[in-house]
Image (tube, rainbow, N blue to C red; front, side, top):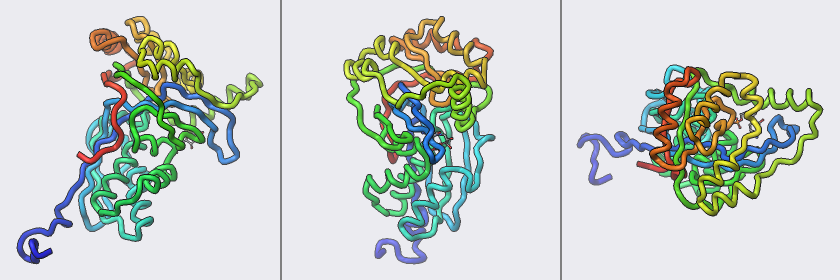
Length: 314
Ligand code: C5P
């Protein structure tokens, strides 16, 4: 404090601002088991963070405030319904202080796109406020707060490639090597995650299917261990594909356009509607991206490498 006497310019706690970068995710496998009594589904998934990012800047302020720019900004709520807002409140309550922070989101991850953008913003807010306020919470406690906020929030703290179990919030690292070339096709409109899970339940009930316990195929884990993109492309699997395509039939056209352009793997990202394509290398990724740019069912195309590191202070 001696270096910053009152009246001698701003004190550090009034000017300090922390920016955190957080990656999007794609689920390389998403196996959905039975509906649990709490309304969630038991699932087994392999999360994979990719180089599409949101940034969260936290600045000391008088009261909690939220602003947003970038991809899909018109669809981002700027009040307590935003997971980032709730993350700041939850962390403040946990450490016994007021959430006197201004949050600014710079979005690169599509909104309601199945790439966990809202979850990334929540994870980024936890890390940014933790740094700004000097709360120094242990990693396990941040993880527990993240899990309270949403099923996909804990993984955004870790990044890399990891298994998710329970409702997705229990994270175990997966042995993976190599770097993968991804192409993402954004849709014209978002898709509601609960609606896709409900459609899955409806389809299963109609077909009188016996719902098997969730699990991840051994071939996928082998492909990741070997860093083999051809094997990985063949092992990609997402149980939410059928319900998402039934709600949005034009997703089928997007998936076929990428496959026809030479993708070695095609996948719905999470609950969609973003579609993910694995390419053998950077040159093939450019070919797949160009073909998708021309597809009427596609709003925008992005290329990214995976895995990416989790939420980190810039
Ligand atoms: O945990 P989160 O709030 O992100 O989940 C959003 C919605 O997705 C839940 O309300 C639920 O409808 C569905 N969900 C599910 N089973 C999971 C994860 C999410 O049914 N394991």
